[in-house]
Length: 533
Image (tube, rainbow, N blue to C red):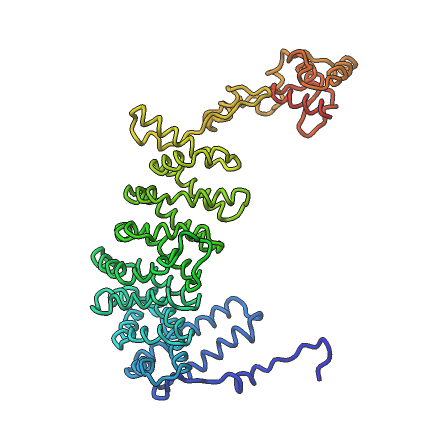
């Protein structure tokens, strides 16, 4: 029995010999040297991660990583070289007699194998995935996506993500050009997003659809075919949950609708709207989808309300004439303003998101939106002063109207001009404000002859101020400080006399009685600070 405080010795050999069990999903005995290579790679990985994680220096750590990297490449190469191994794995998935547990193991094996394939060279990786596709890899997806085990469905979606990230042209070409599988393949992912009960599956399906709809290395004709297939039956199924919403009582969602379904669908639509402008407009503007999504702003589920606001923001930013006309006719901005009024005193994310929406309208100068919201809701915006966005919105509308009445070009109102700032009340005039607004190159530089004596400039600037010293200075200071406010000073000469009797420095008190020269504003600040003591 070990003593208290003594570190228990870990038995790594016992773990590797008895607890680390070698399990084959598919027998690999006929592939020479494969099992030994896998065992060696596992032990090296265990050595790096468990036995010596803190004792390895950078050079040894890099060497071990290189050994593991090249071993994994060799493992994938041996499996790829075998003509029957990968075919037997895919056949096992399609076999209806395969148990759920075995199906989960096989799907996990495929994901791990494709994960190791990312270390291959580009051309070798393409050959590997072409070989998998030729062996009917895509027939695995319908079986796995409809499996009762959630692990199998997650593995299948992860496998699709790996295919899209490492060999996108292969998967997209299969979806676009394989005839009857076009819509069905997209429909499978949409069903996972809409009908699957697991939130993780919904999220993975949404990410996969997003990658699939915006692939790389695809020309415009192929992309148009892909979008036409998506904006058919799959899209109708995608927006079907919104048809069940009750706009008269949007605070309560139907029991058969999951909030994460709504969230993921709206997030997907928010990205598709600016990317697929024409395809989306053809469908969205002829349905009740946009008003139903706008009604979700009233829901108590904040993540759904924020997603709805992001979708409406993406629609507004399009600045499309037909889309704007649809938004205005259906009063889409009314729930936005209404929700903002309800959250007016709450500094939460929904409040900030609404302010950000109107800030975007002002900055981009969406003229039709500016005119619509100010005309209909200007009385609401006038009373909001804690955020400058709404006052800018009103001024933007006024500028647009002035440009229209003056007959200038529409681009003249795109530059937003702020009203001139109010001059400071104490001693600051317009000339001083202009001086502070000058660029560095426009400011006059001091004469190098006086650069070594910075006090000389200030003394020469106020050389006409009389210097009072000694007892007379003390009496003058006492007299001026008996006056309690700036209005009691008869004129500016009193301040200058006080200044001449003292040496003022920002880090020194005003009780240092020597001569000093500063500008009028600093004089006034000095006197005000002293009179307030």
